[in-house]
Length: 142
Image 1 (cartoon, helix red, strand yellow):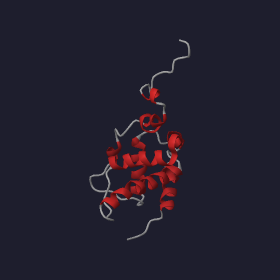
Image 2: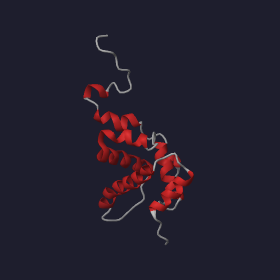
Image 3: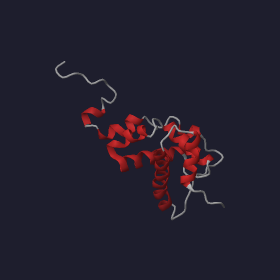
Image 4: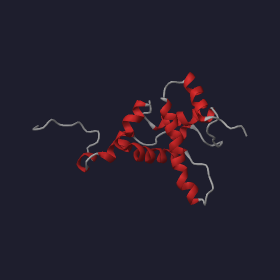
């Protein structure tokens, strides 16, 4: 089987699709590895395919682990604003030959994942603000 250079695939994607920053593609590759580690360990060293929903969960955990409260800011800077964007990146990498998929995998697997503010901002809010996420901030004294 022909070995594909990940950086070359990313360059090819960016040559015709500039929606996402180069770092977003590398982040997805790293998040995929992060997601697969516990699965490989649980399967006694054997790799198995992961679903889009499993990857979304792993992406969230990896982003929070790596970037903490800056995760949302970085993702937005890279052009990633919703779970569907993760799907677009994954499938661009699949089409470029850097990742593989099964016959049942689709971009739709990434639809309706999680709200970015809930996933990446809420864990860092003080407890009394977590319930108010999204509510307008009232001026002091009113």
